[in-house]
Image (tube, rainbow, N blue to C red):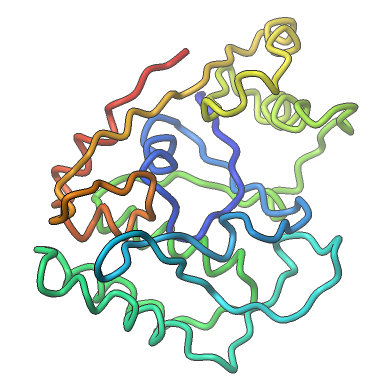
Length: 235
C-alpha cells in the first residue's frame, strides 16, 4: 500500500491533488498545532488586473497550541459569499467559472464547526468534480496504536508501520527533512513527489504559478486537469 500523510489544506494547489491521485491511502493529519499564515484556512487566486490575492475562512480566536481539528470557524461571517465575490472577475475570462462557483456554493448545504471538517469536505467535493478517487482517513479518528515519535520525521514512519504500508510518498519539500534510512530499516520504501506545474492559460500576460486549485479549475476541464496531475517525477 502506498500512503501519503498531509494536513488538511483549504482548496490546495494542484500538487496536493497529484499526491492524492498517486497514493492508495491518504491520511489527513489533523492533530498538529495550527500554524498561522499557512494553507489551512487560506489560499491564493488571481487579482482582477494583475497579481494575486488571498481567500480566507474566518476563524474564532484560539490559543497558540490549539490543534488543527479544534480550530473553530467564525460562522458570523458569510465567508462563502465573500469568496464568490472575490471570484467575480473570472466570469468574463474563465470558461469553467459557473462550474467552479457551483462547487463552492455546494458548501452552503453543510454545517461545519472546525476548519478541519470544512477542508475535508472541500477535498472530497473537488475530487468528485475531477472524477478522482479519494481514499482517505482522518488521523484523529483512526485510533491508531502508534509508537511515540522521537523526531518530527518519525510521525509518518510510525503511522506507516501501524498501517503496514510498504511505501510512503511525501512532497518534494521534505527531501532534506526526512532521514530516509529510518524507512529503509523498517522495510518501507520512501519517495518524494516532485510535481511539475506547467503554465496554463490564465488569459493574461504573466502566469501566476502555485495558486489554489480553484484557479486551475477555472481555466481547465476536469479531463485536462487529470492529465496535469500526472506530470511529476518520483525521487
